[in-house]
Length: 271
Ligand code: C2E
Ligand code: MG
Ligand code: MG
Ligand code: MG
Image (cartoon, rainbow, N blue to C red; front, side, top):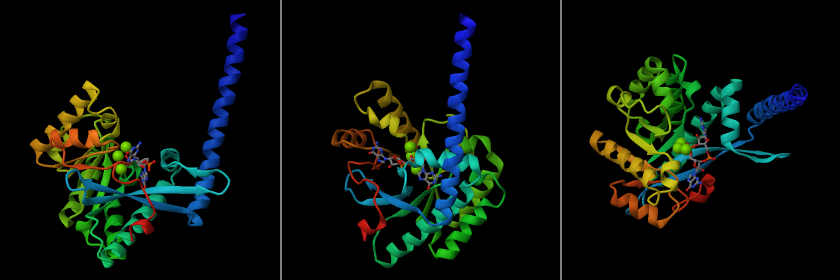
């Protein structure tokens, strides 16, 4: 009996796996086509000073509308792009598009602080990745001090040499570096000693239950203290309530990003 049941379960799992692999392949093919046909777009979400509400930056977030499937979340298609080798092209497109938009805002006299662009780990794995960033700046004419790169902790731990060299070159030009989703990665804080970063983004998971949940609050406060000690900026992700805004300010966090202030929107909404 047991063997038979196992057999059934095995077939069930393997069919499910095949389905998922198939779905990923299809999504990769669709994404490749969307990239080629210019079907991706960017939305922008301002980052604000928690006290005054004025903009300190704006994050570019990739969006994909597929005519058959509707909106597909970046949480779904970015991992597919990373695994299928499409992330380089996607990343270059995001960087170019975001920098070009920032130049338009500058020309319109819109003070957005810095434009913040997410960079996926595989994009920075190759020698010369920093050159591509410089090329995008040159192509679009965006001054380097108007750009910020959001990178993840895992990247700093795993690919230290190549990443550090490129980041140092870019920082020397004036490009800022933010660590995204801070607190969810490897938590090997030693890299903060060797590689100066400009900003830590407290992950939304610690803000969601802030200040009610004692543990989330303790972690958020520890990150704020770390940033203060290192003399770098701290920004809270996913600020949704006035209570969170006040509590963050009380704890010494000066910047935030979240639905309380702005949802991500097309560039036209800010013009
Ligand atoms: P992320 O970089 O941490 O971006 C923040 C995410 O939180 C965004 O989700 C944003 O829409 C969402 N968010 C902002 N404020 C709030 C809030 O108050 N409440 C809630 N519940 N959510 C909020 P989104 O746009 O779905 O992006 C998800 C992730 O996909 C991003 O997380 C980033 O890791 C990745 N991603 C998006 N665009 C790009 C891109 O161009 N390149 C790369 N490599 N990754 C990207
Ligand atoms: Mg980000
Ligand atoms: Mg983030
Ligand atoms: Mg996040």
